[in-house]
Length: 356
Image (tube, rainbow, N blue to C red; front, top):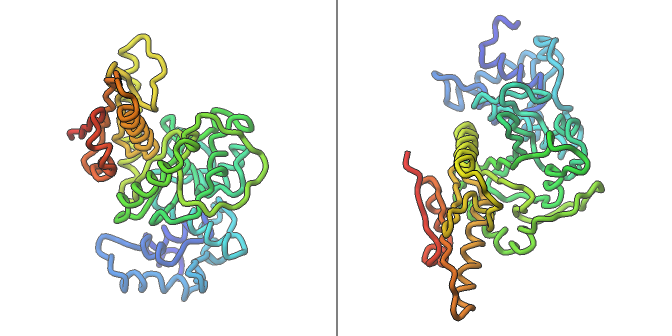
């Protein structure tokens, strides 16, 4: 069996493995899908010749690695990441490999360094470009292009050991530069867990918001201990966008649209000072929060501002504040935008839904 006997989907899988060394078996079946071939039994039949003829090997942990015969089909390809020997290292490589597969589905192909197009750069490669990233950081790569440098995370159902301090090192400027400093995060979660994950992350952050929303944070160059903390957000992350595998491309487009919308509004007003409470625009007495890209950190800032306003109205006898906090979201984020009953009923809170 030679290269000419292999189908396009089989060759595509071998090319991917030549670049990333490892991919989980279930993800291999995903890559073998074709318009007329989507059933698991059919996909397993398409995979079987690759092991039978010595192109790949499947391990007990479900990992599929490329063998010398498979690599010989692509002699010009240099692996982007090393396979790693331990169980933890193998899981890590498979996670990066899977994310690269997902990114390619939306036209964001993997490269070693930034280019003219929007590209996905594996975490191991990005560490060579941006010094100072702590070793315990869990990002799988960077989505870079159109002025964005988003640290990408595969968070599944949202239950993972979050490295609060280590992830902050992606935003350092002391040891790196503004050209390599992350502009935000992109959290990729399971399709059916999106709202639940968003609400849990927001709640975890809100409980510790006085500490987490501080503007200043020390930059460390020493390793930090492994954290067992649930996912929490810090002000230094700037933007934390939530998406799913099927919505990665749409989410990136929404991020760019939102940036351009805010930039356009700022350009219309000659003098624009800093806007309090993390809002995007202030048109006194209105503070506007545009959140068409599901930025979880922006939700936290909005909720925190409204809750502080509620407390001020209760504690101050003659409260003279007349600020309106206006949140603009997409219809699919309705459950997230209205997750706090006291915010929904607050006198100073106003909710808007983007019209398509």
